[in-house]
Length: 269
Image (tube, rainbow, N blue to C red):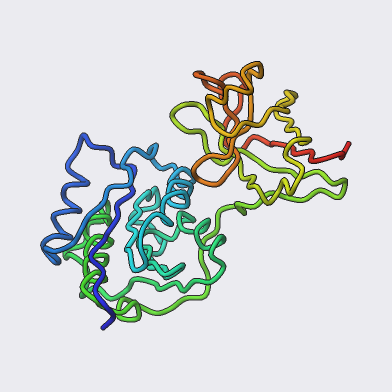
């Protein structure tokens, strides 16, 4: 047995209209009445694994060591996709092996993955359409009671990966990045971090959909830079966001997730 961990977070695409989230919480509390359940969000767009991966990446560091992160965005429920438990960064991640945990693992570098096969921890009979309630919730609850990861199934050496969260360095000194998320305000969150700019932020420029952005702010309503329609700002997730004051940058740029963003730093041409 490992030390008990009372915090269990929930991230799903279930919304709040139906019973799904409540049923998962009921299963968790039936096994561990002392669990502290924290909702990250249940408004991930349906079946949008990338949005789930981003929101998990942006939030997991806010929680203490030992937190159990239960994430269910699962278009492959009932299929051959594996249910897994990931141990990484001092935390535990429970959910489907469809890439939703891959960006956290890419950031952390070191991780262990376990295939959830021990059905003594499942809620039986196991529904073919609601593994969030019958498989992932009871596993997370058992984990919170101190059950060791090895008890749930064998360790495996592979993990389904989304494309790399890191931008690509170009031979001409440019960096090819992309939009990895568009938030509800229309801000285009790129996979660029401060490390990609070095000391050249003042002289950098971005190119996206033939639009050039050379303005970078410290915050959204920066009084020193009110003339630029579109600008870059480092958001709370640590990534550079392309924003438009009180409007949607996504609409202004006709840009969606996956759009290419070219960074030209310093004196590069």
